[in-house]
Length: 362
Ligand code: SAH
Image (tube, rainbow, N blue to C red; front, side, top):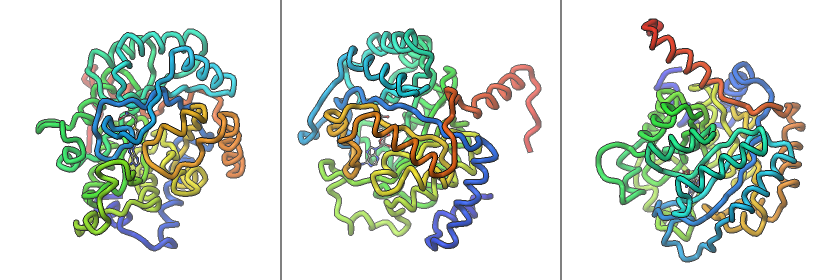
């Protein structure tokens, strides 16, 4: 599939014709990563954030947000519950909390790894090379850092403190790969000012970065953010504006599977917030679900965007729900840590390069 075909799939709105795209993505998913679904237990350790991302409810100046920060003991207890529920991967996510120091996160990783044979994924935002190196050395296996959009002009308009130069997240995804992490990137779909052409660029970045994990969700306006207060008419100013719909996000998800067949792709929470995201995502290229372990009283305040109504449930119920969806589709649950096959492939290529045997590229 070439760039023009990808673009034309992205512009396709006929749901009947789109069935063919879902089928291709589903077949490639089955042939590349199989039918087993990976479950990752997500702990949202803090909603404190020093950043001002224009779209995100955790942004530091959002006074409507009710802030929390889990203690180290709380995090370890929840991680243990996750292990007891059967999770083989624990994901630690948060805003860019100034208390997430290199030392505190390092010792958290060591403690989790010392108590259970699980993979640890971090999703804590932008840090320097040394900090990522330190966490990797402490045992962190994976890092999720969506680049949000590869359109650097748009990225800068949403992150006012970012100067000209390099896209800070694309740069960091390269570091993370270099440090031996399984690296996860991804985008929001339907950001005001986002064009179809830029989505095709995003897809090319997924492949160019050899992403191990790709997270894609619709942009959901949050009225407590500057971007969420944008009126619809203003948002549609751009002729080539991508709509912020679940359908649009599914098209990106399916194309991401086609671009990087071996990657681990979740059916994201934002897709769930707009409808039957887990079920449909798993049928359109996804092979991962990330049920939340965050207890209800805190999950309700991890309010990045509105619309997700799973906060009231306990971790067990969210896990049960995931199991139900997976069995309804006749799929199985993966019993391993579910490591990246892109990484295995990438390591082989790196070794060949080191030995000067780079395979001829065509
Ligand atoms: N602080 C970390 C992780 C937390 S945010 C980081 O910045 O990486 C996790 C993801 O939520 C973001 O990467 C973004 O893609 C998504 N997100 C934020 N605001 C959103 C919104 N309004 N609608 C949909 N997704 C959003």
